[in-house]
Image (cartoon, rainbow, N blue to C red; front, side, top):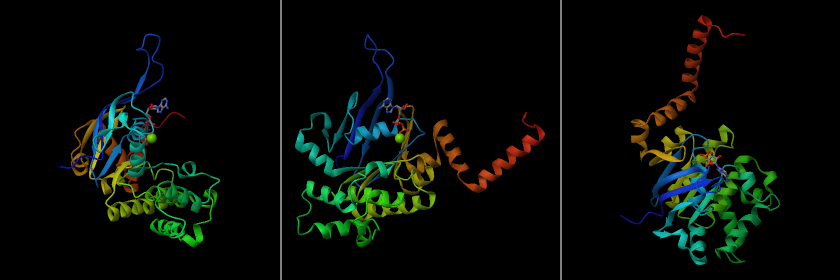
Amino acid sequence: MSIPILTARGVVKSFGSKGWFGAGDAKRAVDTIDLDVNEGETLAIVGESGSGKSTLARMLLGLSKPTSGDVSYCGQPMGGFAAPDWAAFRKSVQPIFQDPASSLNPRMRVDTTLANVLRRHRLATRATLDTAIAELLHSVGLDPVQFHDRYPHQLSGGQQQRIAIARAMAVRPKLIIADEPLSSLDMSVQAQILDLLVNLKTSRNLGLVLISHDLNVVDAISDRIIVMYLGKVIEAGPTKQVLGHPQSDYTRSLLAAKLVADPHIARQRRLAIEATMVKHPEPI
Ligand SMILES: Nc1ncnc2c1ncn2[C@@H]1O[C@H](COP(=O)(O)OP(=O)(O)O)[C@@H](O)[C@H]1O
Ligand SMILES: [Mg+2]
């Protein structure tokens, strides 16, 4: 088998003071995690808020250094990266964040944002730049004529996220790490952006690390799942296996929460709760 794109071994991230004597009250946001991300696969990381998903994502993206342990890119530990290694890594592994408004520069037009990335990585010349920008906008479902000269505040949340995706795709990455990319969007827009991500992934044979608390999404698109709780991986495996036959109580409870997202079941539960409340009315 080929070498994974990303490998984490024994990765720990602690926050907070170490105290006078080195031990103290440092808190492990990520606690000794091992994982591999293989070429072309979709790996989902799930877990409730505060379980350490974003902290792990930032270490996988090389945006923050593990307190201990190591992340490797194509078998090479990031701890030993020189400048050219970082350049290659930044071109191969691209982030998409939850809040597109804060990931875009408010004073920069869409075309400038994309031009900067294309120029920095020498992916377009003066002669090919306009065409390259138009192609990128097309690839994320936006009409170049209509959108090239807009500023972020002139875009909807979904359109902003499309620009963030275009910027990530501009460098032709091998892997996208998306941290709750749908969570800030309206329900109706979420499905469209998910569709876009899946289409791009398939047509370009991208790897995708998708961080999400929405198990419906994860069930629909991921190959493997890692379930995190308080900084640790408590369950991992192929998606169908983990969601079909969860081994831990925690995964079972996440799945139970998922069912409530189904309006029919939510209504049945509410009726059942209301029925017991009639028998045992709440104190006013
Ligand atoms: N920069 C930081 N400083 C201190 N604590 C942090 C920092 N970032 C995250 N944490 C803490 O680490 C834990 C995990 O946070 P996070 O990775 O954001 O979880 P998730 O993305 O799963 O919601 C939380 O308890 C959070 O408060
Ligand atoms: Mg998070």
